[in-house]
Length: 212
Image 1 (cartoon, rainbow, N blue to C red):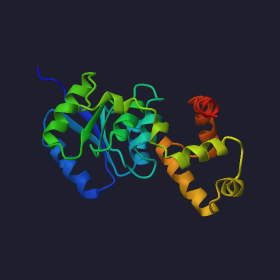
Image 2: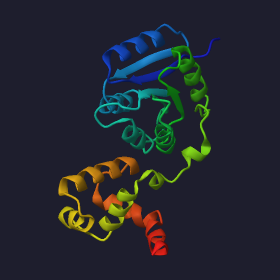
Image 3: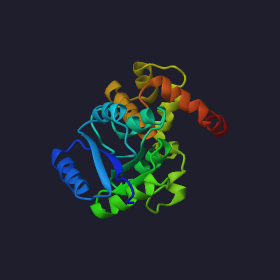
Image 4: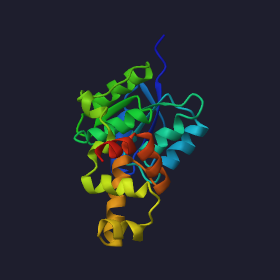
């Protein structure tokens, strides 16, 4: 008696990449490619209809993105074990993928054979991540902020609107918007309310008071 093939779901926004990976997986008798999708939303809908054991996705999936997809999946009963592939030179992606519930991470340059080795291990319950500096993964995301961004965050927490921020920091409103976009991206936030919540929950307000 042979082991049953592992059911796989695959998602990539690049049609060529999706087709190449799908063909590679299809040729391995140890796997059954159950579904493919070009978007995070498409993957979510597909695995809701037909459950899979392992999902393999590009981190930069349109439209929702890989991170939000992982966050959504882990709230569901019996979600697939998820492998993310992306740029290995960005440790922040590794940290965010792990925090969102991924079971493995494959660098883009890794041979596809290694991806299937990883899929087998993940299906058995293992966590598969490349070697990284743990200090980098556990670092405070606020450490990536520039001094101007930290000042902006503190002012934002006082409830100032963009015009007031511009006056206080002696910069233009457009420059305020530019810094806010960078700040949100670095902290993985999407709104002023989230930024203010981060400021107080991270203890940054205590650091600011100490500095005074």
